[in-house]
Amino acid sequence: MRALVWNGVNDLAVETVPDPVIVNPHDVVLDVTLTVTCGSDLHFIDGYLPGMRRGDVFGHEFMGVVVEVGPEVRNVRAGDRVVVPSFIGCGECFYCRNDMWSLCDTTNPNAPLQQPVLGFPSGGIYGYTHPFGGYAGSHAEFIRVPFADVNCFPVPEGISDAQALFTSDAAPTGFMGADFCDIAPGDTVAVFGAGAVGLMAAAGAKLMGAERVIVVDRLDERLELARTHLGAETIDYTGTDSVQEALRESTGGRGPDAVVEAVGMEGHGTGVQEVYDRAKQALRMETDRATALREAVLACRKGGVVSVLGVYGLTDKFPMGVVLNKGLTIRSAQQHGQRYVPKLLQHIADGELDTGFLATHEMPLEDAVRGYEMFKDKQDGCLRAVFRP
Amino acid sequence: MDVTQKAREVVSSAVGAASRVLPGNRGSSAARQTLTISRPAEDVLAAWRDPQVVSRLLGDLGRAEADGERWTFTLTAGDERTVEAQLAPTAGGVEFRRPGAGAGQGEVRDAEDDTEGGRTGDGQAGDARSGDGAVLLRVGTRPAPRELGTEVTCEVAPELSAGVGAVPFTLLYRLRALLLTGEIPTLRPNPSARQEER
Image (cartoon, rainbow over all chains, first blue to last red; front, side, top):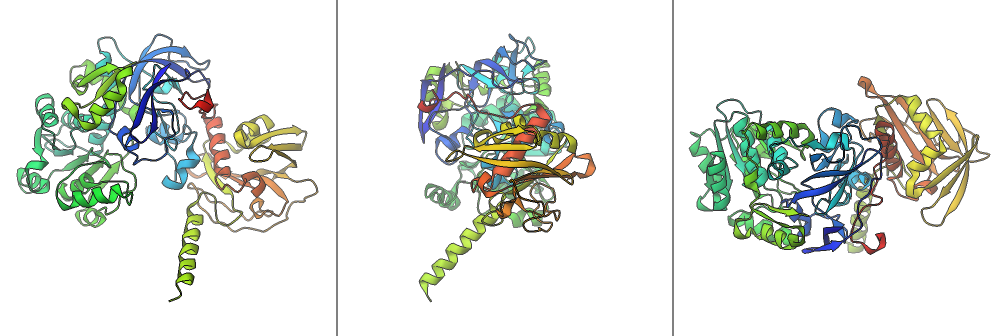
């Protein structure tokens, strides 16, 4: 089959690789219909996240049609059109049973690689480095999905592939981030980062009852999406001396009740701090440019919630003193997609949620290298590039 | 200041710190890990008495065959070699002893090392980690609190761990996956563009 593979830092190619097969009895194989770029892929493409091997098939946000079914799969049949969360759950361990699916205790074949770094390993994920499992990713014609009964969600008729696709990762991640904020009616939620995850966090915050949602970014085309599709207020941080001040002033001096950070380790910023982080990251003295994370902590009101969705490695200069003295609650996780996918599909079916506008560019898988270039460099207003294998 | 001495101290300190954070490493021969498995102790111990299951847990490390209580471990990490062992019950566990070795050899360890929410070190004698030749592999169980199942401790001798502290964790991780889900996560065959996998 054809697949997009990682051959080294900033070295991608579409190549012919072996087809996946059923390996374990709860597996299915999907014919991938749509698969999409994600900002977290850029971290290993750019060489900041270790653990990729030359030839790895990557990609983790996808949907498809079931073509092969393992002998112990009960709830999924060949021909089903399904969407699959990026983290793989087993449905049986303590964490899956407590709806914390990305923390699954059994699905990471390379857990021993991760344990020294995290203390306790995460679940496995498709196409996202070997410490995270080493599974083949979704930027391919076919993909093996373990534990299909709990990881495949049938897409109801009336919901298009383009709408369903983002319930694989961007939408559940964003909604989880909003969920972490414990939103009460009348709350103001600020969202740092107007990528697909940030926009879905903003959509989630609105649906959960936030009175005001303020999205912060530097790209006008993305801020425009936040305004027109979500009814959010926006701040272009390049046009203000201090986002913290702008948020404080616009909330009567109180500050937002919660801040969602949806940027991650390759965030942009302004001023001396930006120069410092870029230099240090370039010298591999830190893995993260944590500008947005620090700003989020500073901008949140006292006693508020900072919900961290951005992917980070090892961050230095984290303002723990600010967290302590402001009495902040920090909440974070890789997405527990299985908790949210059914609700999200229902929101889409009910016309309460639009995810289709996230797909700004669509192209054949054969053009995926160009798609990642467009996505990485944000060419032509690219928010997400969707591939059709 | 003696720069050479200072450098030695720094290196020694760094090595010491690294050894403290590596899984299962509490010294040159340490290889022990505890995981909690939400299954009864009987299920856990039944798995360790089944050579086919133990072979699945070993995976790349080797395989096990049994003739009654006499087991043969074929270790495939590095130069392939076989190790004979006798399966013997212990209080709440099992151990694989080399022929001629009696119980009770080796050091007595204290309760320590919280590895994944579980206490380890129950004062049993004959530490597999000590490399004293008595025990190749030891498994101990105790009830976990709040109906979480069973705390399972696995200790392996240096020759089985091949000097890699993560081996007990790997064995227990695979065991937990197998007991909870009926399968062990695997990447084989995992499509990629690597030539060696074609």
